[in-house]
Image (cartoon, rainbow, N blue to C red; front, side, top):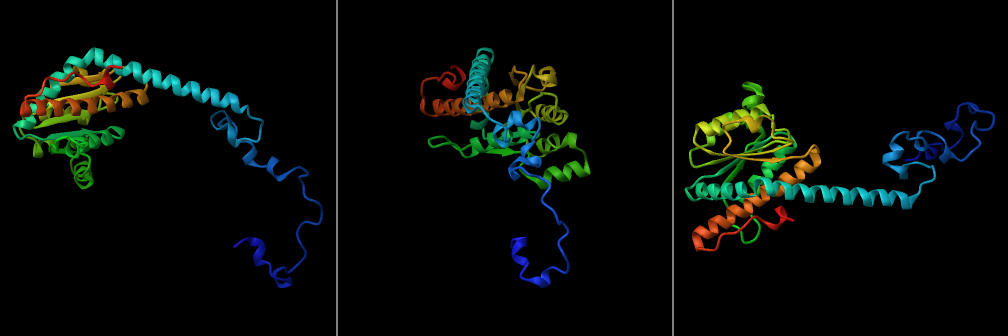
Length: 267
């Protein structure tokens, strides 16, 4: 209920009003207060300020930004394919072999990369129409397990302990990181490698410590200084791995012709 509606009569006012003169501001109400002065945020959100805005210029900036980002990610995907196209094919073949032997995929990562890991597991477990469902598990999906390990043992072992409990020699360990330096991923890869698992790493920048690890069988590095572009290209990369693995399994089952890398990685 508005405050004005509570003043129903004289009883609502025990004395005279506290201001006897005119209001202290003579201009329109919209010209006063914080709403009209948003400081540096005006550069990011020009429509929040009362100052005149060149709408055409704003739209031109937005158009230029979108085109630049689209060009950057397209070029980055092509570069990843140039560097790792053959490795993608070899990795998919190795993954298909593990699945054919009854193995499953265990995916892991931190922060935003944990959601990518869950997406990887979901893509294999619940494929698009026409795909074959394959056993997969995201190691950050069970919050009870993750928090128990953090609380009782330590954050650096949350993946290694799960890989030790769930992993076997026919399985696949896929770890994803933007920096490539996550200590718990490196520990997870060591555990997985020691158990005979196929290990697949996806990193950004120049690969970080993951590029120095002897525990990763197939490493894919997205060479960019931008976290946003890295994560976008990583998404394309692991979807390409899924597609190629499906194709390899189909070829082994039906005798289909070999398939090259997806167009999304080449153009």
